[in-house]
Image (cartoon, rainbow, N blue to C red):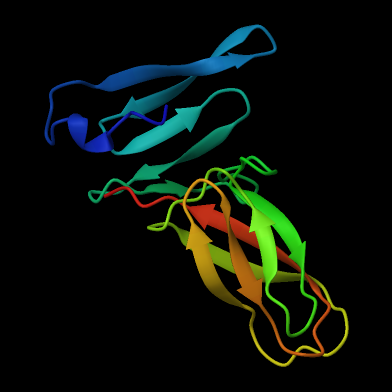
Length: 147
């Protein structure tokens, strides 16, 4: 589904609904249904929302939303701050144009400020530095640049 471009569906098209197969779940084909090119529904599991004119998908179910792969070649993971020394985070899916979001997982030591990304090496990972007394565990999420 990574190569689907929502803008490929022309505005005002006469199509009432479009089913897009996206994979298998429990042996059944899972598909998105785009009705009037403005809403979507996923039958299994139940998931509904809208597609904005800018191409954003807005989930209307509280538990709905994207799930990102964890690990060295995934989009999410964790790291532990170690004070004044930058922490190297290995991740082969990162590019220098990506946005990396950091959030607190577990407090450790004294948090002085938000950790800062020092370097990004495409296809290898990134380094992060935190305050001198911060030994907290942080989550990160990588958002790819679509441009």
